[in-house]
Image 1 (cartoon, rainbow, N blue to C red):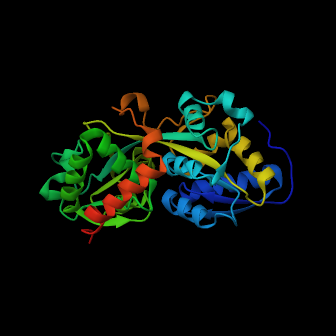
Image 2: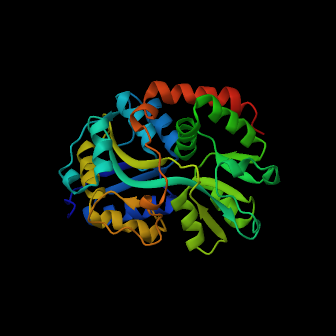
Length: 321
């Protein structure tokens, strides 16, 4: 698909790795002549910003980040419906995301949740399961993000609830807290810390662990043995944004196979949503991962997400060091 040449500006709120944000913004600007003003924040932070700007939106498009906060934004009327002509080229899971939100958001990539560990720091009896991360030998050696700011960490919270039951999941998180040295703002920060040896284990989406390994860090990627959740990275047009026509041009362009193929240039290894876009060979194969039947509608709802985050603040965040 060729993006239509236009003029003016596009205010982009981007919730993937900053390198990928930059690659996409620069490519779109070259192809369309539209000047892109990009801000990079994690999924939870971007959702909070869009909510704070309700009535006077400054952004036009929210691209990337886990689907749950995109679905919550859709439910709260923070984003606008748009049925792109590119929907016919998308994977079923990407279209399902659009249908679940009455076309207020759409899937742009997918990735399984897991963790990575530094093989220089852990060589024997390496962790293979969620339960292994509770071992006392990992005290102060695990990093994970805060689910209030990070879509990755919220996906972990929702995954554990679906895997084990809600009370059991919070029991697990309380025990895990004994081994957590830091709750980061960004979902990918823990694996970067593991890559440099600052911590031994980072709980992240598996493609973020792969990215560290591809760059030469001693990182081994793990799909937990009990099964795991996954994200549908999503995109939404912000309701009432100042450049709505340019937002739709970005939306169609970002769903194209050519635009999604730019991910590899940014060392990003998610599974693209366009069926004609080549999946990077290094990307974790979803078919090889024991994925749960993640309930995106429930855990992306405003009520459930707000409730679980409040419980996390009360029972886990209050313990955080």
